[in-house]
Image 1 (cartoon, rainbow, N blue to C red):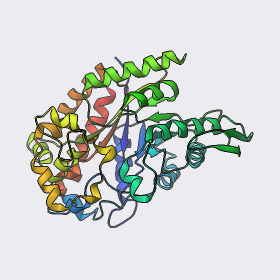
Image 2 (spheres, helix red, strand yellow):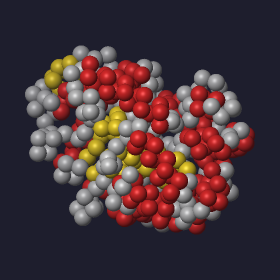
Image 3 (tube, helix red, strand yellow):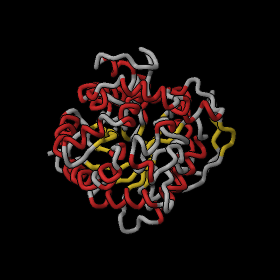
Image 4 (cartoon, rainbow, N blue to C red):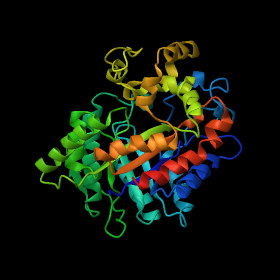
Length: 382
């Protein structure tokens, strides 16, 4: 039997009542489910259009009234580290931007968290998305090239031992740059790369500690990409098994199939399918509303989509597309699906519970709690 570890993603969005309400709720689920880690996303805004984030469409809008009110992730992870003495969860950022944050600042934040959490930090890293860069004046050209240079910069600073670093780079040149935060017992945070395209997969194989893809793909596609990563590692004289094969999934789960179907057919879940690239839509016999070559979440600008347009897009989404873009079902259903990913190489599963998309708060929030814990526990036994 292969041992699989699990992590749980907290949305990191500001709720009513008390600022840490959702943080405490997610941490409780992670502990109850025996998760190895807890994660925070790095977003300035949501992948769901704020125009449809209303109690009319999702019950959770009653307690999370602002879809785009995302907390700053490193500050949030510091809060979690201060409350992690008993839980001893690993703390990951999933994932932070290569362009919006200077890599020296990211290196500093991750190294600091690693020390303060006693060696439990994970640096999730990727090119980011257009929505978190372009609207804020950050250059969105060459995101992969920028990512590769940012990753090299972080490694150079971490390995410098406090000696000034000079390094040429198109994006992040260093000139006598000093980085003197020490490692924790000789270790730096492992770098988990969110890679999907061929070039990113090769970079992952050459330089990453783990692979954490998130966009819609089949288990077979996952296995093929894992082969690419391992070949790249081998070509770089690394152990092909040095890169931990992980995967991130958004899930819709409930106690009954009827409740799951209501989640799948909810407006937020169908609109969220815009995050799937056009070729995934094509598999279900429909064209992506933003074009036959649209890349999905990486280029989506949700805040530009008004309510009428979002509802029009939602009507075009077949339930089968939602079920491919997300993991959907009762705990038994989802564990059966995760077994396929295990059989295709996945050894670490991070889950983001978006069952709150259900129109009724009682089903989406409290009603999905026990199923989520059952999935976390069951995944460890796969």
